[in-house]
Image 1 (cartoon, one colour):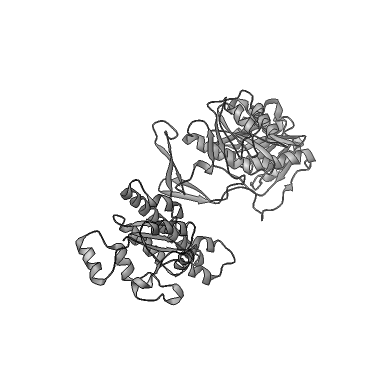
Image 2 (cartoon, rainbow, N blue to C red):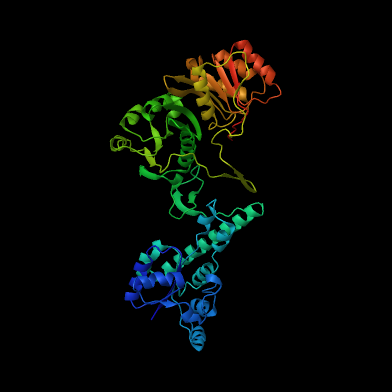
Length: 504
């Protein structure tokens, strides 16, 4: 008669699974809390101490850490191992069902005491998982209730045991990493990087056809960007980079916003009462670059939004939802991919980038830090209300443009939109010229945002010749006074923020 050992904190699906095993002739063995749950459902269950001959000790800290348990799990399917168990009167354990104390959940609670945290470090459960996973040639290990159904009748038992062993080792590795990180935080030590990532989305190629590429997720059931591909062919490496840039920019605005991205940098951004009103304004920011772009909207896409696209060829549209009518209209665009996102919040997780010989880590740049100084008007003329509305929009938008970033914007009737963007150049004055070329005549009367200070007056002088009326920039150059004087000579208003927003 096969033997199943249960010791679970999360009792989801426990009694149904155990009942089916019992009906199939399995002997059920369980630790105290799990045994009480099974007994309450009317199932016959042997307590762990019936195998060990020892009661649980130290308020349950020691239950399964005993040779009778671990030998029964680790015994191989050999004559010698079977004889060694028989000599002690022990029977092999064939199935180990264990999930761990919720350490990660407990440390996420700011009210959790140190004593509670320490007591939620599982010892016996980790040992059981590792022992069963090591002996997966004979023993099945289950650490996730989602696997109970398949475990009853796996189509290929050896392959299933191997897959469950890998899952168990992944779980204990992640668990230990969380514990290590917690103790590092308590001792103020640098937290080592421990990444478990799963290759969930193979890509046809990388940035270029001769490069191989795969999307990795921290979850085995993860998806690119955490969204759902509703329509269109598989996403590419470049699609994902563009979509990431567009979604990050769109979600930072509290208003309805649309962001158009090409080659990982925005070419048009707009806010309006609805995304249907914003989309045409965003496209108009640079209609040439918008061809073959990706577009992000931070509100549900409707039919009016689709109409606002006109006949523009779009690679991808990412949004929190699509109305049924919008889906029907977009079905005609066979090459347009649709990605539905579960949440409309700025990503808060740290950013990682690889460089030769290592990695870079930083917190995301989603807003000016709360401790930063308030905006300061440094010119003789102050911005009027319309200019200030446009400046605040431009300052939010410019942080998502590649440095050196310069952005021209306007505010009209409750709508804010870019008219020209220049970025990614080695010097700032060239970015001003580039933004002005993109804007053309719409530069006259626009405001300008610069992600970092102007090192010389020349950038302000070029902006003045374009017809720019107000500028927002961090300030902090040794030549700030000369830059301010250039703005005063041209009659421009200028605001210093005291905060820089480079994006390399």
